[in-house]
Image 1 (cartoon, rainbow, N blue to C red):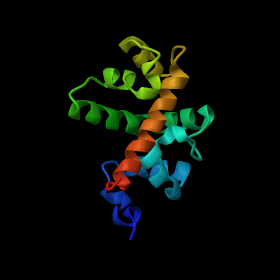
Image 2 (image 1 turned 90 degrees about the vertical axis):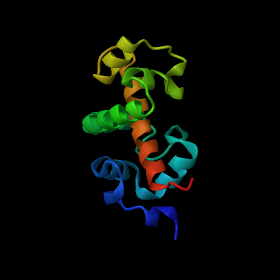
Image 3 (image 1 turned 180 degrees about the horizontal axis):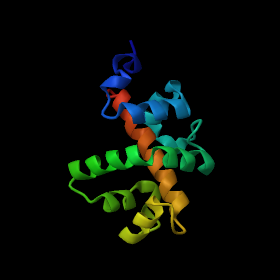
Image 4 (image 1 turned 120 degrees about the horizontal axis):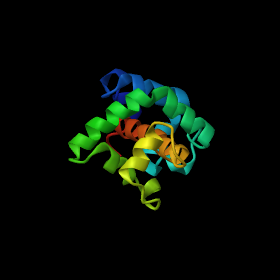
Length: 131
């Protein structure tokens, strides 16, 4: 039995976000996302049009996850997002991150894309805890 069969959607931290990620990419991609990261190019998480729309539809759930994870890591939410590997080279200020999360500023697309990837990767890892 593979890990995907062991972890039920209802047993995840955020079943609604889990269902949204599965709808976006398909359950079959989640093990590879857990292994390689969402930036490796997976259906529903490749193009800005897809990732930004996913973020916008699920922003509340993604922000809830971010708040909890940032707290668990002893970081501020804006600091945590600014430290994402895919955003690090931009050296974003907290203000720029906050603006981008809310759809404003020149970095909105990149930050919202990163948050969609974050959601996909977190869900993929949660459903594949042995990886």
